[in-house]
Image (cartoon, rainbow, N blue to C red; front, side, top):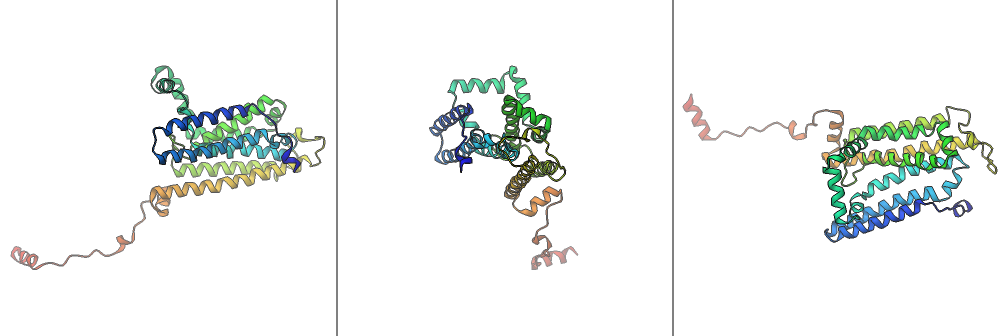
Length: 315
């Protein structure tokens, strides 16, 4: 129980989260003045999901998870999963973009909108935005961040330098996580830019990469990769066993998020296409599956006396 109660800390990020929540509530209040009840309820539900993502970030940074991550590698892996998967999924699903924008005063909001969408001076920003929102940039950057920061030299650099640890490692995990999940989950007003085939492929590819990384740190090696976890006072768990547990967390969590994500994609595809067989036809590029009606013989209408008379007169 002491592991849960003790070693909570205050991080300046708490202030950022508090300001974000207040801005979101202000935006929700202003939108409520001009919206129908159904949309107001939907935004409120989304806000709870968004706040859940912010809470996941706070827990990963301010709770004993962050404290013990410097002593146990497997706790560090749990922290990475929360920052890279859990928090981004909830924030993207919460779709806070419109409420946060409406937190700005009307005149400021219009000036910002005109500048970024219409001004020639903002062409560079628009180009960067299109590049960052690219599906391939999202999946490549997401997996690159996951792989590169587990290279021993970079991982130990982040352990020695707190700025690198917080802003470079954790920052890249979170940002690439948001970009990746924007390609999977609709987050109004943004929609995924690719269809279910690409989405399912990206999830499977990412899951395979996570599994290979976990295997490399556990069953494909016999030594600990990270010297920083060796000879820590008070830690009796061997560094290699610690690394194996961390790899197991990465492995299990990879399957834990991938399967629900695939089910979510197929259910949405079925809702769009109308049936499971139609989804399979689209994924495989086949023609639409014939219906039972197409196999039934066509009935020829019986000829009437008038038809027979007309036929006789033509002969």
